[in-house]
Picture 1 (cartoon, helix red, strand yellow):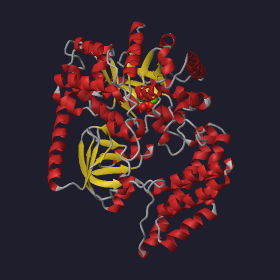
Picture 2 (cartoon, protein in one colour; picture 1 turned 90 degrees about the horizontal axis):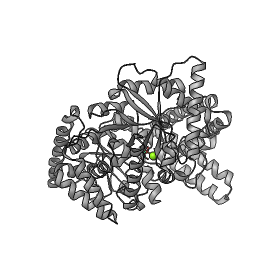
Picture 3 (cartoon, protein in one colour; picture 1 turned 30 degrees about the vertical axis):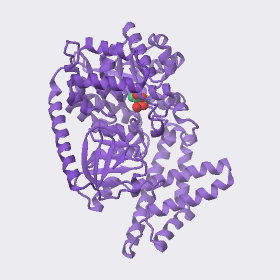
Length: 589
Ligand code: PEP
Ligand code: MG
């Protein structure tokens, strides 16, 4: 039995599918003689596909961003064509019968040891470039969908990886994945977000797992308690099968409330919205009874695109999402790249000493104005698709706003985009402009910012990590990065009350919106709009139906007196159990 962080609730039983992460877990398989040619062909195919990608990326980035930004992809193509690079890989496949992935890992180790001796910064950067090329190549070599067919695996899969790349995480939506386990990661890493948006049980932060499990093993994922069991005895397995069935039944039962109104027992109406990462997620939002999309994380469009989506392409995707969304209600967040999500063409090939506190999100967008403007225009054009007289709303959400100057600058760009569309006679619609409240400085000075925005969306995932100075993706400090810690509670209350007093609509779109205990607290603080992974909506709606604002307000009063996170958690668990033991079971630790 392995212990990790419970990041997406539920029980799943399936066949392990290990994604070999080339840097942490080299493929040590030895090839049989008859497999050598096939492996060479696989490597060549991966090289060809990578070369096509890089050339397309270079052209598109050059056209849309600039020659300087595109130059990096020319360097990557040179590395890919370098005979020394490829001859070594081929040689090891043929002579030493290692797999292509194994050979790439060895190559990287070789370069790392040569370059690290020099201490030369320029060479260190080239090492990063080689690493990028290797990552691209290995992504083609370990495509989870293709491999599944080739490996003959069948049945529900439990994907096991060190950490999923965003593109892999999105691709999982197409496969028969019932559970996800990662060695790294946290409540808010890609794997966790995707798992929750699809309702897939998941556990993160299980260190050393890939050395204990192999593809084909039977694995149980208990995403409610953060436990993973490998090849369990038949009795344990039978017990888990029972729990799995119960969990499905409970979820089905809850999802049946999709057409019920989201209203508390004492009659307060709520808005329960969905967080989505792509157009496919809108289907889950509809199926779970969301009243709209409260957060569309557009960066996934960039992270999973083979090159750079231009304005028209963005417009087409936004329009599709708007058309499919419940009540045609969509909040589109502008690019939030950086931190744990990077794209090379937006300058993330340099090393950031503190990625989450450095050049990320809107800070980065401001420095690529043309690129940023294309996104702002695409969102406005999408709003023109709303039919007059029909319900619908397009909201534009700027991430990681720190101060008044930034919000003014964002507003200025919005006006500029309006003007440029009007001058060219391109239709645009009315868009509300809002900020994500994620930076403590903005929380403290919220009153000043409220004069500049039409709405606020609290990004508690980031707000909590910045308030506690504890990396949201580092399992070692997850004990500190706690949404139910007293300092966070005080800050959230301050922000929600400030918004309500100023009559500025406020939503919370971080992961805590979908956590039953946190929901109770937020309801008592006066929050009425919640955006969460679609899979949580039925549970939260059921809880809302059983809770009263009056009780939630009393709960907040008590919590405000508490001094430790554990006290808050224990007390909220008790209150939740009193409302509904079933819902308490669905809460993660
Ligand atoms: C947040 O920070 O709470 C949020 C919703 O944004 P993301 O998780 O994409 O950083
Ligand atoms: Mg955020």
